[in-house]
Figure 1 (cartoon, rainbow, N blue to C red):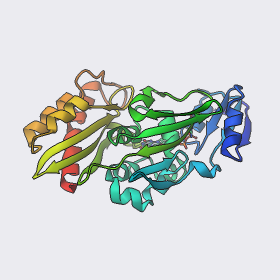
Figure 2: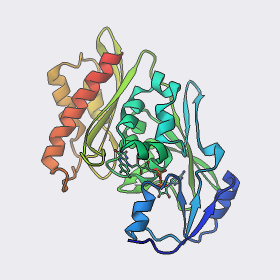
Figure 3: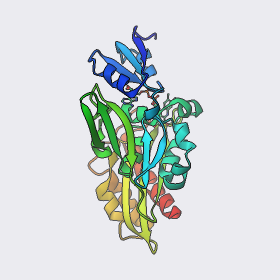
Length: 285
Ligand SMILES: Cc1cc2nc3c(=O)[nH]c(=O)nc-3n(C[C@H](O)[C@H](O)[C@H](O)COP(=O)(O)OP(=O)(O)OC[C@H]3O[C@@H](n4cnc5c(N)ncnc54)[C@H](O)[C@@H]3O)c2cc1C
């Protein structure tokens, strides 16, 4: 289908973009367009104006920040894959990024666009939750910081207000001596997660001393499985424990069933990816 008619403006600076968004005239931000353009073509989004932020320099790039990372919202997945900082320190992010879509999606799609779109089957929300990331948002009204755990609010719903831009994401350092991994079982055509698990662990003498676990693809949003992660602490991640953690990770979660996978199958996949991601992370310690 052909999208409805809209105006198109290319922001020349961050200030310029924020000013346009403050207009309250139904302006919609576009970065790589990989999620938004399909919505326009199905007429599920009918904005009066598109504001292209792809050329705003302050919004892209990856840099070291307080021994962790700062990732600009308009940074492409390609930039993430090419980043030595990410490769050396955040394998969970490398694992997830390398499996996103195809080469075209990774070359043009941005991490901020993916996060702001908040598809419940997207890979990166789970990764950012497990890493304890926080998001810097900005509008003409001011700046605010939102923790990843408060950002994802439901299917395609986030903490972003209509006049706000996601500026960047701040990722804290992994615990000293810690390691991380992401494992997903993908929908074959798109690569979106039917079930995905992101894990950060720290071990001492083969015993897990810290764990952060987040899942995606299973319900209306990515979520942290804190009670399940606690079950792993103090263990050597033996098969029985992994099974218990996998079951606990989805306790109380309303699991999605759809044309790609019924809910019971997703529940089974959740336990599989949790077990595999924990083992992969521990093997990297
Ligand atoms: C064929 C295909 C396969 C895919 N496979 C996967 C997959 O395997 N795993 C996965 O996780 N994802 C997958 N995706 C989704 C992909 O990750 C997203 O489409 C992409 O990251 C969106 O980024 P974008 O820059 O293209 O955003 P756009 O499409 O430009 O924007 C998406 C939304 O975010 C908003 N937005 C963008 N930037 C900002 C900002 N800085 N501040 C506020 N709002 C903003 C826009 O207004 C829009 O609502 C796939 C997409 C396609 C087309």
